[in-house]
Length: 144
Image (cartoon, rainbow, N blue to C red; front, top):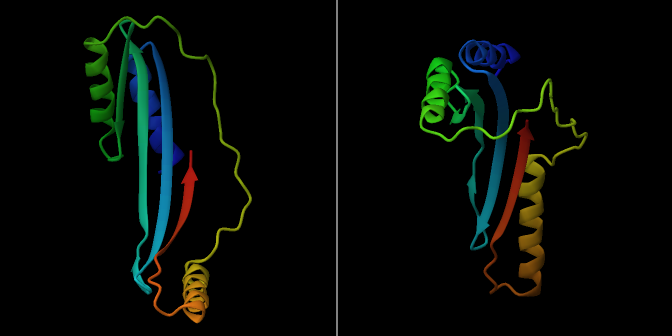
């Protein structure tokens, strides 16, 4: 998602609501599973989404979506929930923009984890070849 999409959501929501907050999350996950001594699955899943919180006619509304092509529907859904919500007894923080720090870390590569899993299996089987081994690794990357 580009910053322009978030800006579009903000611009559209501000035109209709008194106060607006937007939250964004992007994740990429790669679970690696060994089951009964064999590599069973390896897949990568990616997902991104946005949550919108607003105050409309003094009432709190909320909506979230992973379909970032329908921002008008997102804003409309948040307004709809506000219409049936209680009066907001608070205000959003003004001019608050929290950015999570970029963490500098080197995530392991998929092939490194597969090799590690196979090495662990070999060491366990050197000890006792009758043991059935299950191993799970999960590489996860999140952006807020």
